Length: 152
Image 1 (spheres, rainbow, N blue to C red):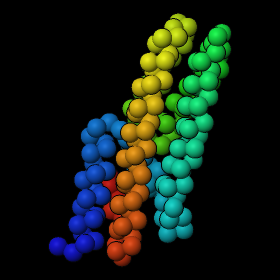
Image 2 (cartoon, rainbow, N blue to C red; image 1 turned 45 degrees about the vertical axis):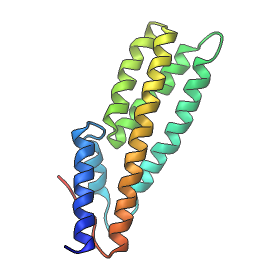
Image 3 (cartoon, one colour; image 1 turned 120 degrees about the vertical axis):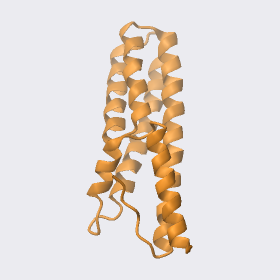
């Protein structure tokens, strides 16, 4: 089997595992379908923006929850934005934690909020590492002269 086929199979298996594990949902497929010859880096650009926004939001959440008097409205705004951006790229598990985060800040439960912050960080860094691996696989496929397999 040639290297391109091997990389493409690896790519499909890896991407399938991200769906099976619930890290990504169909929204990610929708973004992939928007990528074409006229915009070959579309998915990478969208996801890179998600990474940049997420880093800022995680930073702002950590600061907001570290205050003597926590501004739960600010926490709400950050989590709401994080939920929206993770939904928009299909980062399902990140979005799900943002949903449960709400219960904690609505109750002004600082301990629960800090626990949710850690969970959302863990899930975010997991999906970030997996997507970076996916993009490296894409680069290897293209460098070997192949096309990125489209799923769905």
